Amino acid sequence: MERMQVRSTYERKKRSVCAVERAAQAIFTVCAFFAVLAVASITLYMIAGGMPAFLKVGIREILFSTVWKPTAEKPSYGILYIILTSIVGTAFAILIGVPIALLTAVFLAEVAPRRLAAVVKPAVELLAGIPSVIYGLLGIMILNPLMYRWERALFAGSETHQFTGGANLLSAVIVLAIMILPTVINISESALRALPPQLKASSLALGASPVQTIFRVLIPAAKPGIITAIVLGVGRAVGEAMAISLVSGSSVNLPLPFSSVRFLTTAIVSEMGYASGTHRQVLFTIGLVLFAFIMIVNILLNSILKKGDDGHE
Amino acid sequence: MNRRWKDGLLLGLIYLAAFFSVLLLAGIIVYVFARGFRSVSWSFLTSVTSALQGTTGIAGNIVNTLYIVALTLLIATPVGVGSAIWLNEYAGKSRWVRLIEFTTETLAGIPSIIYGLFGMVFFGTVLHLGYSILTGALTLTLMVLPLITRNTQEALRSVSDAYRTGAIGMGAAKWYMIRTILIPSAMPGIITGVILAVGRIVGESAALLFTAGSGYLLPKPGTGLLHKILESGGTLTIQLYLSMSKAQYDVAFGIAVVLLVIVLLINLLTKLLAGKLDVSARH
Image 1 (cartoon, rainbow over the protein chains, first blue to last red):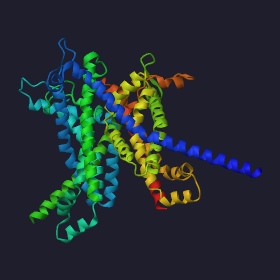
Image 2: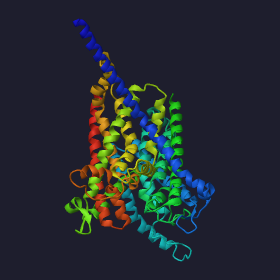
Image 3: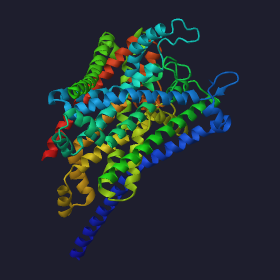
Image 4: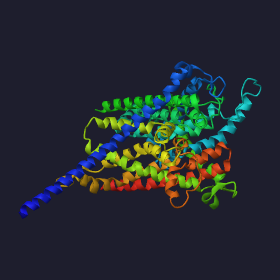
């Protein structure tokens, strides 16, 4: 009798342990799939939000028209210049930022004496932590007045140029170039550090100078990692909004260096507050275009990383 | 001779690039402090901007920031840690792992303005939460989730397998082993993830502009403290943005000083923790 009781409490305990175990596993599984759910619903809502305007205004009218007059009596919703601005702005930010970032990564991974690296590395990390609105504030206070001076000098006699007070594409490009530095530096540095040491040793043993080794051997060998870094930088630059929304000016124009421009992100930020009706729907379409850009960047990134994995196997 | 000249030039460029980052950071800090130092006073930090009383202050924004940080972490930490535990301890080689890791990476790459749009529509309109601190916190939860998941995963990976086999071999059930051995060992990594998330939340603006709104009033005492969650509340960054679009640069630089101090502190904290993590890894 007693024995049976002992046995039954043991079983009960065992069963309750089992129940707890199963519950724990179930909860963790749900947590893990949360990310999938989040991405799926964001995708769904971006498409659902962006499509109505496509249907109402017409895909060609939105994507290939250059006239952006959403609040005019006869409104026009062409976002071609906005898309072009994002592409051109990002491209130039990458063109300026990546060389600086790559050289800094080389400095940290190969050149720097320990003491100097101990200054540069934390500085880069801090740059990554500065809120984007602060970059925007500094852009307005420092870059825009400087640009205005250049603008007045350059377009002194021009009658067609619309003066912007310095809030132009060039200012935004500079801010973006600075903001992608930490990302590109960090990823390229880890790529350089992950190279097998024999690579450097054999290059040096063959008589190449340290600098030749860096530029002819190490950087080419770290190419997949560096490309990853650049792609991440592109994602960062395309998606940045608050830092450039006031710096880049407030009207939609062809992206020329000294023109006031709107990016995909800044169009949303500055107009969502007051937009309504079709205008608001088109802003969601702009969001969808931006989202499509980012998804392309992500898929690109994923395939680069996958290729890298296969290479190692 | 030619080669040496070229080498020297390239080396010079390398040094120049490296010092550019340092100079940039030093310039930013010095400029912001020089411009904003005078705006920051006790009353600036502890009062609310009011035309009636003639005060300019950011107390409401500081409180909003704290609310959003706390609320976001309250939701994101358990989910992020749970997700990492499943990926590392339960999933094995399941093909779902790839999908979940891909979506986690994707979440990390989505720009904050997209989070803002999604949060505005889904939490704000569909779930009827409107412009509120809760809407903002839920939106940011999605955004910081990858940070916490990835840091926890990394910490779990660095826990020696001997701990796992030892505990299981002694008859511990899996969840018991996770609870008493893995989570404590991974704690520094989890905390690092959480602190990084705090930094991200404090610096965030685009995702909050259309979700948490721009309220700057202090919560009313009593039940108002709880009700505040459903009211609009702009964080420090939002107030900074609004101030600079209204050309109130003194206020803007004052807030920038406060934000920079917070960023510096968070950075210091992660450094200290990283040091600790290294020590525990060496055992």
